[in-house]
Length: 87
Image (tube, rainbow, N blue to C red; front, side, top):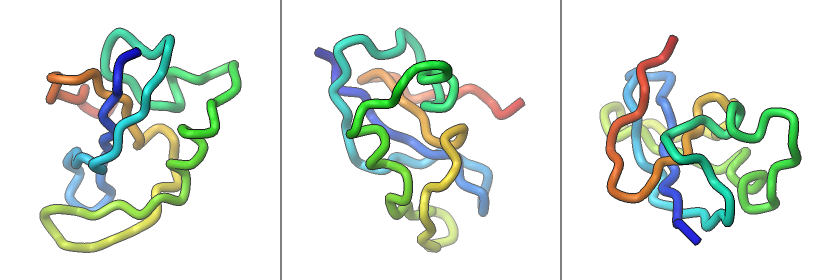
């Protein structure tokens, strides 16, 4: 069962930052994907729901804020460090 790294796209600096949490999913995405896209049309497991409202830290500005938008939270496969550019 892969352990997916959790990243978020920051509103302040527009960069991606790790949250330093991992989520184990039996059937997760095979590429980096937002939780909004991956779980569209199906229920989110409790550990993913728990990310909503989690505090995140911008490494550039030093500001802390709550994660509120699922399209800004990404599941990243281990050893993958790139997140697709925002459309």
